[in-house]
Length: 273
Image (cartoon, rainbow, N blue to C red; front, side):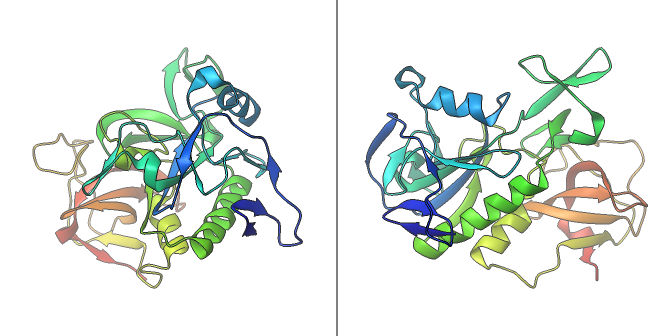
């Protein structure tokens, strides 16, 4: 993909679908890329919402679960996606960032034995990751992202990074941790960020525990353990993010599938492979 006059195009020169949202501000020189989930029922319904002036919300792009991309705001104009936000002394990230919304129901709760969204739709277990958010120790379900959607997001983000001098790729939950949970534990932020910015591309993503190790619902000893027994020595982990000496990880089972997410102390894990 490539960007022509701040609008996204396919490599063959054809323009990505563009629907102009009225919810926009002035000129933008982007420094950050912010990833979101829509917490909506479909890409179409989320786009329709952001086309309404009364919504007072928008994003530069919306990406459906099938990988279909719709642009709502040119990349050189402010979109209203970040709200009250802050990152390392910079406040009001709308003025400094490009926002990408991924069609995803987000946080799910158990109702009648099913994982259910806030708008009442039930989701099959194979579309759900049971996990604690990095800023909240409670276990919830989170709708997983579709492969086509993640591929399209990576392609788009690489084009944006090639065109604009980005300082960082962040989640909405990074810049508004007290208000927002998106893109949530199901989004592979650590590997996505590294792939887009070329940072730590050779750094190992997989770790193992050096000893029996407690896994907690937050980055500190004051947070509760997620299970009574510590993780066994040699447990395999996928690193998702870091906060000081604490690491937010997915714990893998014997089939190499994640079954638990939480925080472990970085001194007790070592790179694997």
